[in-house]
Structures are given as C-alpha cells and as structure tokens.
Length: 462
Image (spheres, rainbow, N blue to C red):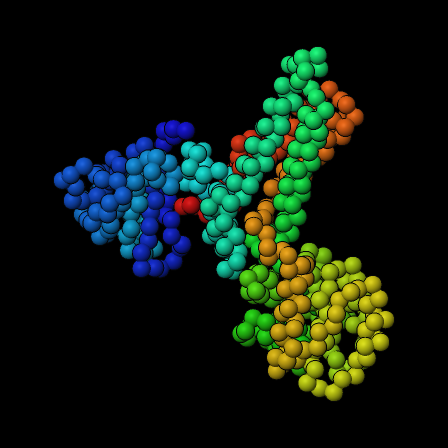
C-alpha cells in the first residue's frame, strides 16, 4: 500500500535520557534528511548506514543538536516504506525541538501505532505479529516477553496458516463435488470419510488453541489477586513480603489501609497484580467507608482472592462475613501468624469453606515463613496444570478467542450437515465463514473498526 503522507514521532519514552530517537516514515523521509541535516552527504544517502552531523534550524540556520541519522529504504524497513531515524540527545527540550524541525520539513504527527499499522498494511507483518509488538513493549515479566516475542516471530501465525491451508484444501474437495455428480465417479465413500476426518482434525486443532487462552491471557495481562481479610490480620505485611519491599504501611491500628494499594509481583514469570485493600468491618468514618466500598468493587473484578486469616485467633464475625462475600470467587487461603501459638482449628476452617477445595497455607508475613508454599499455591492457581507450560504457542487476546470460537461453530455446523447429507453448497458456505473468522486473527479479513481499536492501544512512535 502506498501512503502519500510522511509521519513522524518520538520513539523513545518521555523524560530525560541519554538518547532520544525520532522516527520518520513515508515517501518524503529521504528528502527530509537533506532539508534539516548538515553536512549533506557527498555520496548518495545510503540505506542502513549511519551519518553524523547536526540538525539545523530552518529559521536561524544554526545547529539545534548534534545527531546520528540512519536512512532505511523501503521495502527493507520496519514499515516497508522509506524511513529515517534521528538519534539525538535525550533531553525533552532538545528532542521536541528536533521533532518540530521535522514537522516544518513536511511530516505530520503519527497516530497511535501508525508505524506498526503501516508495517501491517504493507505486508511486512500480519495482525497477530503486529499485536505482539505492543505485547512485547508492555510485557512485565520474562515469560510474558517470551510469549510476545514468539508471536512476533510468527509462531502463532504459522499455526493459524496451517489451519487455513487445511480448510482451503477441504473446501476445494467439497467445491469439486459440486461440479461433479456421483455418476461421474467423483463422490466415493472414502472421499466422504476423508471430508469428515479433515473436519474433525481441524476442529481438534482449533480446540487445542482455544484451550491456551487462559494461560496466554494471564501471561500477557497478569493475574488480578485481591488480598482480603479483616483489619489487622496482616494484609499489608503480606503485600510487602510478596513484593520484596516495603510498599504498604504496617500498623497495629485497625483501618490503617483506607484506600487500596496495587502493585505487580513477578511470580514464576506470571505478572500478578496484587491489591491490598481496606479490612472489612463496620466503618469508623467516611474515609474508611469509601475504602470498604472499593474493596467490594475490587472483589467483583478479581481473578482470585487471597483470603488471609489470623491463625493465632479464633474466627471472628468479620471473618465469617467476608467469607460469605467471597464464597463464589476462586480462592487462595492463607493462615497468617504461624510464628504465634495457633488457636484456629482445622475443623473450624472446614465448616467455613465447605464448597472450596483451597488448601490452607500457613505463613508468617512478618518473618517470611511459608512464603514459598504460598507462592506455589498462587502459581498453581494461575497455571491450573503444569501441562500449560508445554504449550508451543498460545492465544492471548479476547478477540482471537472469539474468532476461533466462531470458526469452530461454523465447522461444527459443517460436520453436522455433512453427516446428515446436506448439499455440498451449504457445507462449503460454513467452511468459507470459518476461513473468514481465522483470517480475522491474522488480518486477512479484519474490518477497519477492529484495526482501529487494536492500533489505538499502541503508544505513539511504534
């Protein structure tokens, strides 16, 4: 695709840094180098070479900054079109001044994700790879980054393309049966069995990919875990212990946590978003009432609740009240203050959590006892089974899951219709629709609305 305009944006994060990078892409990228850069190269501006010089102000004809520039001739560039990168000093004033000169030379400000969108539209990458670019930028753990890099290198795209090729082959067989009659000898019993087998195998592949969604989503987005418990049970101490730093105020005074504190912990490569909230009790003032209201809101949206009890005391009315509120939530149960004499009986716990299969983990948030067991319990909950680690690749976005589910529904109707002897035309129609849904993930059949929604999540400059 040929774009008539040239875009530019700062590609490095805001703030002070040693180097700031400005990215330019479009048909006028090369000419802009000659407008704003000195000294002009005596030779033709070569692709993939660095040039040292100054960015010159169009108004004063004086240097703004000493820089390095690199020209990338399309299609051998990130976007697939002529591109220019300017590496200047990373002070906010300097990099903004250089960018202003680029705009004066004729570029326009890039939109969110527009460089990657151009790479997609120029067939440098497909949509699954484009989304992986943003996932890699936003990754919070090593395993999240590895998953994104795997998608960027085309592992997911390769599996989806294999499914598409199988469906195209299947469709060609069915459409051939539309053109030839049984008298022509085309439709034979083994052909019918082959169609049924291909439908079944393709549905199995899609089902296997769908089974990876929870694992992939958690690797990408993280696991939301609310630390819940009555006041002064040790929630803030536990948050600090899991984070490995003092983030929450620890006090023997009940109600110290009025708002909520949210931080990311890396647990075996899983980004776990831990939320320390106000303890549930009768509020003593308006601020504490707001904190308890926030707790209820956080509980509604959490993936799991880390329910903390005080093992040195018997269950209280507040413990029982909170247990009722989280009865329908996935639960990780921790018994704190294992360093003190224990008064909380196992039989009492069993009566409180009759419908839960959560195994209590005894810990001391103060001294760190039992923390390895608690981390293992969180990890088991996140992965569900160790088999999750063996996935070759996963899907990690909701729209990918929805598209695969729709494709699977189409193939299920196709298989049912084939078994009932419906006309090949109807079966072919379902397979074409399944192909369209698979194509939504890689961008072969994606609507502009979906594209805009996906790329709007990118930072400007990528």
